[in-house]
Figure 1 (cartoon, protein in one colour):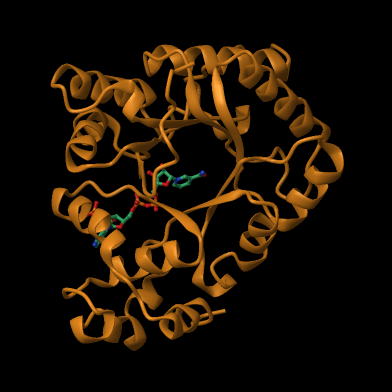
Figure 2 (cartoon, rainbow, N blue to C red; figure 1 turned 180 degrees about the vertical axis):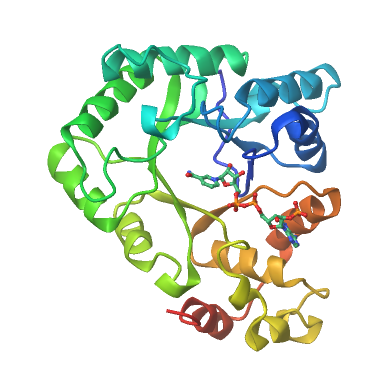
Length: 282
Ligand SMILES: NC(=O)c1ccc[n+]([C@@H]2O[C@H](COP(=O)([O-])OP(=O)(O)OC[C@H]3O[C@@H](n4cnc5c(N)ncnc54)[C@H](OP(=O)(O)O)[C@@H]3O)[C@@H](O)[C@H]2O)c1
C-alpha cells in the first residue's frame, strides 16, 4: 500500500476503445492533468497493458508518480470477454478474480489498484450467487492490500437492493451509463447518495446527443449565464454532472477536448439551471 494514497479525483480518464493509441493517449491525458485513469482487464474493449505502457512513459518523463494517481480497473465475466482472457475460464469464479487481478497488477506495473470494479453483474435482471461469490473474492483482494476500494458497474436499482440483502458490504463506487431520459439514472444516483456511494457516470456526451443540442444547454454556454468564459455544451453537461454529485468519465482522444473537459471544473451553473437540466428529458 502507498504511504499517502491519492484522493479520489474529480474526473476520470476512460481508456476504452483506444487500441494501439492507448499508450500515447494515456500519457497525454496525464500530461494534460488527469490523475484518475479507468480501464478494464477486458481486451475486447480495453488495452490494459497499453495503459501500463502510457503510465510507464509518464513516470519516465517525470510527469507523475504512482502515488499521484488513482487507477481503476475491472473484473469482467467470461461472456463479456473475447478469446483474450486474463484467467482460466475453467477455474472457479474466485480463482478467476485472483488471476484477473494478478494480470491487471502486471499490466499496470503496480502493487495495488485504487478502485476495483465488477464490470457488470452476471444477469441483467438479478444480483446472483455468482455475483456474491465474485464480490467476496474481490474483498479478499482488497483485504490482501491489492485494492483500496471496491465497486460495481452497469447495475440497476434492483441489483443494488438485492446486493444490499445478500452482501455484508456495499460498494464504494457505482459506475453507470448516464441517460438524460432516465433522469440521469436518478434512482441509482439517489440510492448511492443515501448510502454515501460515489456514483461515476459515463457516456454523458454519447448517450445524450439530443440534450447537448437543447436550447437550454445552448443558453448556458453563454458567458453571461454561466458567470464564466464561454463554455461548450460538453462543458455544461460535465459541470452539471459534478453539481449533482456525479464523478464523470471522459474518454476523449482529442487534446483540446481533454483541456476543455478538465476546464469544466471551473464552470459554475446557477442552481435553477442545474435543476432544469436534471429534469430536461426524464
Ligand atoms: N463500465 C462500463 O461498462 C463502461 C462502458 C463504457 C465506457 N466506460 C468508461 O467510460 C469511458 C468514457 O466512455 P464514454 O462512453 O463516456 O464515451 P467516450 O469514449 O468518452 O466518448 C466521448 C465522445 O465525446 C467526445 N468528446 C469528449 N469530450 C468532448 C468535448 N469537450 N467536446 C466535444 N466532444 C467531446 C469524444 O470525441 P473526441 O474523442 O473527438 O473528443 C467522443 O466521441 C470509457 O473510456 C470507459 O473507460 C465504462
